[in-house]
Length: 327
Image (cartoon, rainbow, N blue to C red; front, side, top):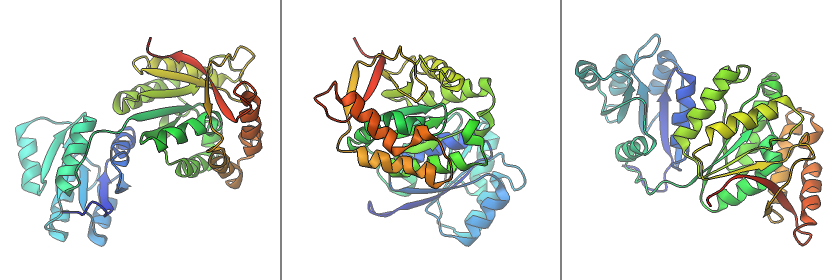
């Protein structure tokens, strides 16, 4: 059983990328877990043989070495290793086969966030308290959320929330992976995580499905989206997709980008003076990675904050349009 101050090492095996990012988000939100993802049984078998793990979470239907064989390999290498098998099949014989192979427990897809987290806590000896509130920020292009609402995200993080940034559009994100690398680095500065379905970056229908799935799984209390009046087509589309997907989210706020139009009429303001340096540090990750976009300049973030601050006793603030809030 792990002590509360130990980092839990989890080997997570899943070949379906869309499911992998959601489950990694479940684990990431628990705190104190280091998750290594393998997309096939061969790679997972190498890792389970060569390294020490506190938990193996594996899909059973894997290409090559399937989950059943992986369970047997894991039990041979580490007899005391707890194994959580997950599957979309509900047949009793399928589940019995998993237990015979060495699975400690089994969950059926689709996975439910709190049930999954509770089972992981049970198997690792890490108690799982009440779920922390979830906050979601939607970027059309990489860096949009960091420029538009990173200060607010830092505030949420300080208040104990799990913060997730979703990138929807290919554009710079697909430019040799430079944008996505920088986005992950920036997220680390903010204490957030990034979710990207790379197969959806250039496919509108997949973006819609991806966005819907993320909102369903994370159940955010607050969502930040690009403003409706924007001159960039990807940002306009991101607003439409995000607004529809977040229909059940209690609070939805729209942030400004470099191409936001004159119809942007903010009514909510967040003082970010004490976190502006951290926001600017996150934005430097893009230039450091070689992504030269003037709209991601740290100085631009400071200029925006001071511009809107003239309406708030000359502080440094982020400005938001209210899309939805409780009456």
